[in-house]
Length: 494
Image (tube, rainbow, N blue to C red; front, side):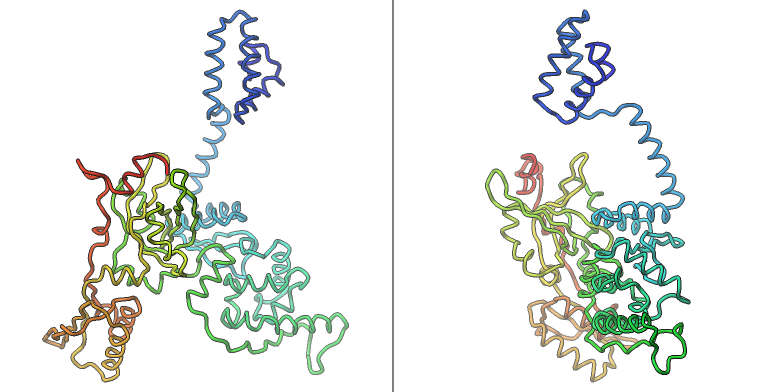
């Protein structure tokens, strides 16, 4: 703006129009101000070619340039926040999470960052939480304000009611009675239950959800009676603790169901992970971690296993076929997986059949300035991966095997017929012998593997696995033809 004023005679208003036109790439306005700039500079004795060159330099800088004052401000903030993160990581992340309260994607990223730093994220709790995330020692307590469907008014009502009680809420019925029903409705309480924010109260999540309507009806009746000055016949005092009715006996949710509901209202898995029950199986298969993809070199073969929690399909301009971008999440992070049209057509059933856990073999795409991604070559459901890469199964069985365990083993094997050899090694105090098991073949799916672990213990089960990385086709072969993924990457942007 100063150059335009001093060199071309622009007023500050005209110079600001120039700045906006450059910043927003307004072509029509740029053509007008270019002529004004060059003509103004020529009138002040600057040669036309020099004036045009100066204007081109200004336009190039506007491609993305920072004023020194702007850069200095960013530098100060960067140093201060880096110092806070280094010396007070829990407090820093709590504050950062609070500032991103309404952005679920950012919360997921920041929670992942906290876990990488060894900072645990504690679930929300109606007996201790406010709206904001709070540091608790080396941990961070999840803020109620980040629970979906729970607004500031509801949180204020919960905190107000809690502060009037001795030791906080003691049960679902007391919670429903004491909070302001006008601000804390059924949807709010349901979301709090699903988020785990009421886990400190008696009963499981499924019990509290099943008993919620009865508790709210009871609380509404109690509140009406108190407003009218009525009291139960034998009630000693209105300050007496609320009577808690027994919660309904209902079937327990599976861990997967509980976590799926939790993710609905939090945007992430907080108190567990769908992979937890298969952790040992995944360890046997030996995939890399999602977060380690960034450490691999471009075009390196890689395998990862995780929960599919994001899928976006696009139509390619060149062929008009569909391709997909998958978001895969494991225990410690997530990464993007690119599925080109051929691979998408081959595997699309896996992405729509309800199989949440995917085992992916592919190659790393690591371009300068971009986050590393995985180019999918082959994908499997977890049972498919086990059947593909487990070539034999060895189980150590104690010599004094009980009749009950022997029958459980036979039943488990009969329920999982397949082609993978099962070898039984009988061991005693001073011997170990392998049973001739040429006729014993099984399908080594997770239910079989985990069943064997349940009968004999984790150390007794030893799958013999192929290296899944070897299943990835060669990429850029020296002196040869690159793989499909390699060719696509060499050809430019996907």
